[in-house]
Image (cartoon, rainbow, N blue to C red; front, top):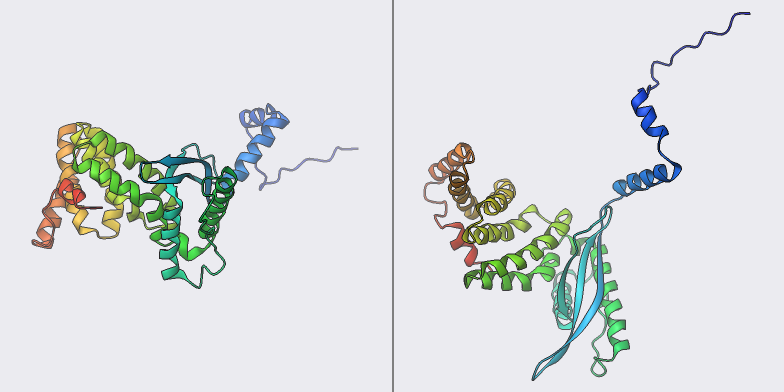
Length: 288
């Protein structure tokens, strides 16, 4: 009796000996870990908010509670911890502004109520901390809010004003520290915002690094800001960024012919409509 002849399925993928060996050498635990990591990569990215700590600030004429607000992204491991401090009054102003624009949409989103007495009781602070954390989560779940420019403004406006004040006073290193916090938050919010959100921050970083005599970092920041500026036609930034990139590129020995050509064409095409201010002159006017 002749043995049946085995035929190969042309659609079947054949593993090479090397790949087969790699798979067979994995333990069950390793395979499960790989599967978990694959599932994490497939999850949609969401924003998460945590208020892990509070502080009581006492001045001569005032006393208040500060809440540390941490912004994180899910869907993958987010090791970049970025946080800002906010008072209850900041939340209250933010909620009032949102209601002016999204009153009907926020009908079911309630800010924890204001308390007239017992504000510094540990139990009251803990309850409010959790309430504010839940409030931010519900705001994020409201589509019109998370896509609104008001949303990132709440997390960065105070720091922007502080950073630009430091920049104007020549304290560039301290300004960079603030701007990096701002950029970290803005990058987490980018999936729900216009890419131009980061342009003022990157431009300010480029100016600070240039004045700190760190041309590599300055070039990298300006180069990162340029694509959204081009795409969305931000004329006031485009010429200033190109001018800085050309100057830094010559200094660093980078190829700048295309950037120089783009700048020349921009100036020739716009015929005086292009702003002639330097990037620093443009940046110092922001957030006054």
